[in-house]
Length: 475
Image (cartoon, rainbow, N blue to C red; front, side, top):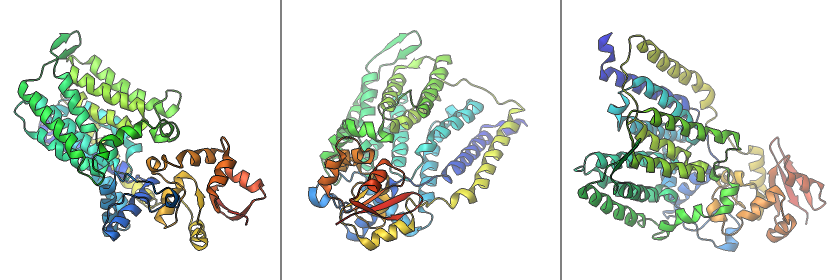
């Protein structure tokens, strides 16, 4: 049995474990409502040979002529190209391979450190990947996670080895990031700045220590910091991309009303998961015999701040902890009986993956609205359709012009607040109705707005299914 616990064998076990988790999670990946307008935008750009900078999917844009910061244009072109090659399986392929790359980076970039304690690694990856599950969707954010993991690897590599030149790959990552998902493209240079500031200190205090960076290291960090800022402007929108992430995060109304943008709140039950995950990290660090590096503290503090600022950044903290926590785990040699538990866990995970395949794979391309509803709207061709926020993407996918969709940053300039208040029947909603002069309404069947339209003499119910109703304004 001794040969079984050689490093090479352990590596294989870890890989099998990750593959099992990978299959189990990604086969269950569903379609986020934003996916539909992403793929439609990508197809439009491929067909017309242009990069969209104005909205072509909403009838409201004909009035406002608003500028669209299509900061995810490259992702949209990529996902549309993938859909053209694999019409039925592109969602599965995208989520499976990108999440697989993420797991590969998180583990193999610090493989030697993780292999110091295989049992801890198994438990840690199980907890962390379960935490990833809500974020594994066919969205550009999957690229963010991979870019972020690479950034941490490159930054820490230079911190540990002053002669390392790998850090010069960061501007390339920053350039691609600005075009794949420009809304988070400021992260690389912010991380570099944190490393520079933390690296200026040299102290040893209780459980915390800091080692000053050498001049060579600081010089490399500073050069890459400047380059990462400069390359961001190499995108279809130019210098506007530098301020775009901050403008988005400064929109208090969107932060308050969009679920995935909302700040972490202890009063919301599912938000407790973030506190639990943070507590596990804290427990590992506090019980470690190794002193906490000041740079690690700053990185964890920064990503923790982002997590409290918005739930969409929870996974940033999770990815940061992967690059840090492996430095604080104790050494542990596998015992004879541990082998059986590890193999059993791997077999169980792979079995679960295979058993769930047929059941979940059929639901990958779940429709948001019924064929009956879509067909009716295509037949009547509404000119000023009112629709709920979450249905906009699927309507765009079916060539129906919308009032609003998942591009909240675009609509925040003119009608996002109106759309939200009308959906909730808050404030002077009748004034909003008069403002836009809707000819048709697509609403949730049992919503307050649906009941209002039903009781009013100004609207006729013309179509309904189990989920939604369509009302027409009387002439």
